[in-house]
Image (cartoon, rainbow over all chains, first blue to last red; front, side, top):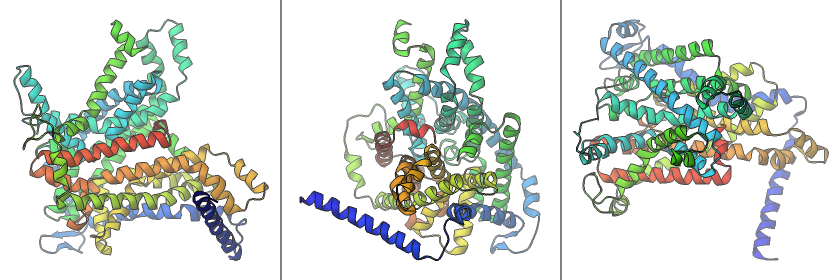
Length: 319
Length: 268
């Protein structure tokens, strides 16, 4: 017997020993496995539920923190007050930041979904293997590269001595300072969220029967008409899902406004971070966090009410 | 037009537009690779001459080496604990009659509905109260919590595609329950487990904002270290560190394609 066969035989024997031991252990446990099969299901989902309960408990904790008193020296005083909520209503800066976050997120979401539809459509429909592979590559390289790395890439492109200014200079056009402008933040967010939107759209487009498009064409519809009246309506569940995912991720983004906004275009997340690490005002940060969750979830609920749950709902049913 | 038609096939304009999008999507990653090969002290265009000096200079930079090790440990931890949790949760939800299943599904989506900065703040409070801040495994636990739905979805799609009568067949041929699980059920869930594990690993390796909030100097992960360096200056050395991420992403895509096919990731 060669060494290799010996190894394989040995590992197989070890594997069976483990399985046999497990079976023996199971038989020794005085427990009727067949009778409790449904309750066994609850035991199976328990670890997942426990893991997520950190966040559920955390939200309750935040609600509690939001009515505690902030003190510059002791940080938290365990006396109940609604002062933090009053402060939320009175702080003008907060209002500016909140409105900015919502407006930018809405703009980015619209742009993102508009750009994602053709991309997702070609990923699904193109018959060229190489092109399809390139598209998938363009989708997953950004998806697997973190937000910091991509923001850094944009810093190099948009910076004072960056790629864009070099190109402008080479074409003898006036150069400009892009960092710290709304354009930089919007471009950064758009590139950050596009892969998410495409990933939400592809299942919906893949489920459209290509024969429907051929039928439309046979009936004399132009390519644009087919796209507008056949593909778009049938892709609506995917569009809903892409809208929700882009908007909620955008609302919560920290790094792109921070790095590309030059410190003047903060989002709610930056505001929260500054409260937590700048002034250590945990109660007010808790108020801001709850407000952010409330705004993001009410947006999701409104979209669900108006347009249905989209592919997100399908995934919930499936999972 | 003829060129467009030749390259674009049925959808010439759509193809041309999508090629622009493709460039837009990969430009930041490509530019990092290009800049990291420059030899100048500052980033400038066009890069003067090519050199690998920023890469070789990385090895004696403890500033990046320790965070890199931390990131790999955290990502491995996340992947290791999310695999069993993902498998049992997906099996439990699909195979067993569970009451309030819809409610539980929505509950399990909590990591996606709570904004990451809020999740980070929550972990800061809870882990702080428990005295867990400063432990690397606590960072791993936090990142597992925020990404676990990816793992559950991924495995669940395999569970859905699996024909349960195969298990009955194994049982009727005399296989014991545990044997059936290891010989039949688990192997057929592998595609979902592999793609989920890959996602968990890559997302944990790249995670930033939660890590920024809950790490301290000793547990700092690489994205946090890079962020700190970017705020200081944008020397080409950061490009060399960042390009490690771009290269890892490319390797991950090739591995994913070989193991389960990229198409699979479109459905999770």
